[in-house]
Image 1 (cartoon, one colour):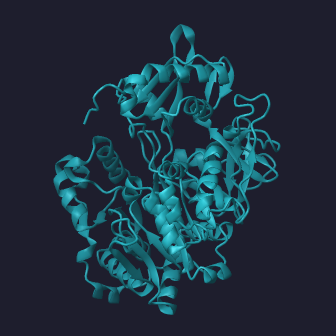
Image 2 (spheres, rainbow, N blue to C red):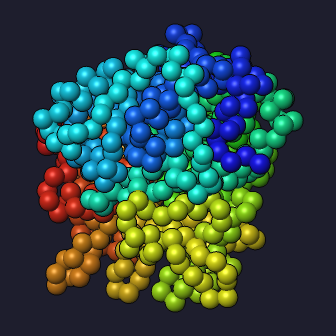
Image 3 (spheres, one colour):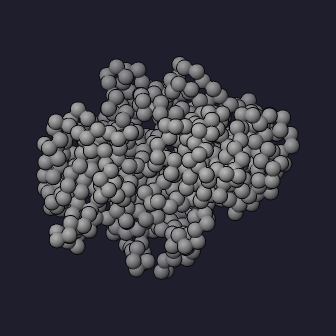
Amino acid sequence: MVRTLVDLLTAHASQQPDRTAYRYLVTGDCDGEIQDISYGQLARRSQAISAWLQERGLAGSRAMLLYPPGLEFVPAFLGCLAAGVIAVPGVPPRGRSQNHRALIRMKRLIADADAKVILGGREVMGALGELAQHLPEMDGITCVTTEDIPGDAAGSWREPGLTADSVAFLQYTSGSTSAPRGVMVTHGNLVDNERVVTERMGHTPDTIAEYGHEMYVSWLPVYHDMGLIGPVLNTVYLGVTATLFSPLHFLQQPQRWLSAVTRYRPHTSGGPNFAYELCLKHATPGLLGELDLSSWRVAFNGAEPVRAATLRRFSETFGAAGFRREALYPCYGLAEATLMVTGGSVDAAPTLLDAGGSGPHAGAADAAAVGCGRPGPGLSVVIADPEGQEELPEGEVGEIWVGGASVAKGYWRNALATRETFRATLTGREGRFLRTGDLGFLRNGELFVTGRLKDLIVIDGRNHYPQDLELSAELSHPALRPGCTAAFSVDGAAEGEQPVVVAEVAPEMAGEAEKIADQVRSAIAEAHGLSARDVVLVHPGTILKTSSGKIQRRATRAAYLDGTLSVLGVPVQR
C-alpha cells in the first residue's frame, strides 16, 4: 500500500530512472532553452536536500520554500517530505521591487508557520538579503541555497518513518483576511487526493501508455494548490512526464500555453477561467493555423467562477485548431480538501443549465449555470442549510459541505477556526464535514457552484450573488475586462445597504469612463432592480485577487472605503 509520495518517487527512480519527470521551458517557448530532470536525478536531488535537513535535526519543523519558476522547487519540496520536514510553499521575493502587500504577506507566513529554515535559489537568497532589514521575523532562521547542497549528500539519507497522519505541508490560503491560515495537509490527504485527481481525470494505465507518458503541460504557480497538487505532484504519483513554464511567460504571451500543448500533445492542461479568456483575446487567424489541440482530452477550469460564455467561445474559436468541446472540464476544489472535490466525466461536454425564465439573467445563455462534475471516489458532497445544519433537498441552494479522506487535518495552530470549519456535523449523517463557505446546489448528483456564503449581498431582504452583478456589468460594455470586476455592498446610512461595482478598464478608455459607468448602472438596474451607489473604473491589474485568480471582494471593499483604489484617470501610485 502506498503511504507517501516519497515511496512512489523511490519506486519510479528504481524502475524508470532515465524517464523525464519534468521539462522546463526556460523562455516559455518550445524552441527556446529547455531544462529537464529524470526520475533518477529527481530522487537523488530530493534525498540530498532531505539528508541536509535531517542532519540538522529539522524533522517536524517548518521550511519556507521560496523559489522562482523553474525545476528547483520540486526536489526541495519532495526533499522536505522525505525528511519529515513540513514544507511551506511561498511566493519568492523580488528584492527592492517587492511591493508592500507581498512583503507583509511573507512576514505573516514566516511568523505564523514559525519557520526554522528558508530554502531557495541564489537569486532569492540575494533578494532576501536586501529585504532583511524589513524582515525581523527572519532572525534566527537558517537560509539555505539548495543549489549549494552537494549531490553526494544523498548517500546519508534515511527514511523518516512517516505515517498517513504526518503533516506533509502547509498550504496557506490567500483570502482577503489579514490573518493567514495554513491548511495542514497530511501525507494521507495528499495520496488520497492524488487518487481522486487520477480517477476523475481519466489517468488510467492505458491512457498513460497511449500518450507516451506525456500527461501535463502547466504554467500554473507551484506555490498554489492547483498548480502543485495537480500538474506537479500528480506527475510523481503517476510516474509520468510534465512540461512546465513560468506563469509570467504565459501572462506575457498566452499563446505560449497553446503552443506547448500543440508541441507536447499532453492529455491534461488547464487553469482558472481568466486563462481561457486571455487565450481568446490572442486568437488571431494566424495563430489558429499554427495550432493542433486535437490531443487535449482534459482542459480543466477551476479556482474561480467558470463562465458558460467562456466555455462556449473557447470551443467555438479553437475548434478550428482541433479543440473538442468534450475536452472542457469544469471542476471544483479547495485547499482545505487538499485540492480536488468534484470533476466532470472525461470526453463528455460540460453540463450547462440555462438561466430560468424569472431570474435576473432570464434568457441569457452567457449566464447559464455550469456543472462542476461529481465527487471523486471516497468523497461525499452535501448541500446544507448553514444555519440549521441540515441537509437540503436536491436543487436547493445552500452551503457546500465535503467529507472524506482528502479533507485536510485543520488549520495550523488555529484550534477555533479548525473546529468551526473542519468539524461540522449533519443531522442524519455520520462523520464530520468540511464547511467550504461556498454556495451551490446538486442536480442529478452533479455540483453547481453559485457563489460565496460571506460575499452574499443582502438588500431589502433579498439575496444577490455578487458574481451575478459582476456578469451584468461585464456584459454591459466591451471595455470591461472579463473576470476583473468586483461587486459588494456598503452601508449607505439612510439608504441602507447599496451595491458598489469596481471594474478594470483599459487606460485609453478614460475619456469614455462616464459613459461606461452609466451603462453599468443601467445594466444593474435592469437585471437586478438595484440602484448602484457607485461604479468605480480602475486600472488593469489592480483589482485585488488571490493567487489562484479569485476576486477578493472584501479586500476590494476595504480599498474602496479607504480610498486606495487605482482609479482610472488618476495616476497610478508606485
